[in-house]
Length: 112
Ligand SMILES: [Zn+2]
Image 1: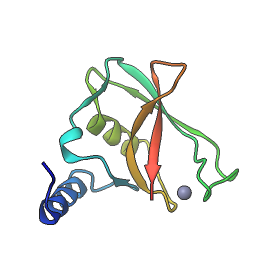
Image 2: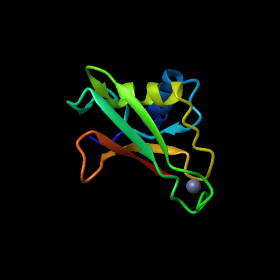
Image 3: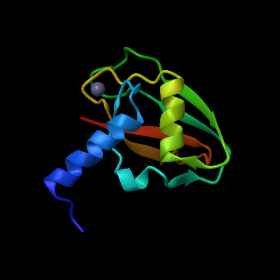
Image 4: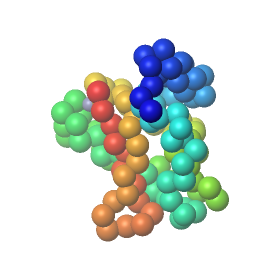
C-alpha cells in the first residue's frame, strides 16, 4: 500500500532519530532497515566516490564490518562509527549492492 505524505514524513523523522550522528541521509525504507543484507559475518563495504562531485578527487574507502546478523541498520551504525561522510550532492544512502565477483563485498548506492 502506498504511504501518505504524512506517513512518509513521519518515517523520515523516525529514521533521523535513529541515526543522529550520521553524516549522510538514510534513504532506505524504514521497513527495510531490519532486513538481513547477507548471511556472511564479515563483509567489506566499499565506497568508490565515483559520482561527478568527487571525480578523481577522493580515494575509494573500505569499511570492514563484522556481525552475526548484518542488517541494513547494523551496517549503517557501523558506517557512522567508522566515519562515512557523504559530503556531496549524493548524500542519500539508498542501499548496499553486492559486488559481482564477491559474496562479502558490497558497494554503497547513493542518490541525490
Ligand atoms: Zn556526489
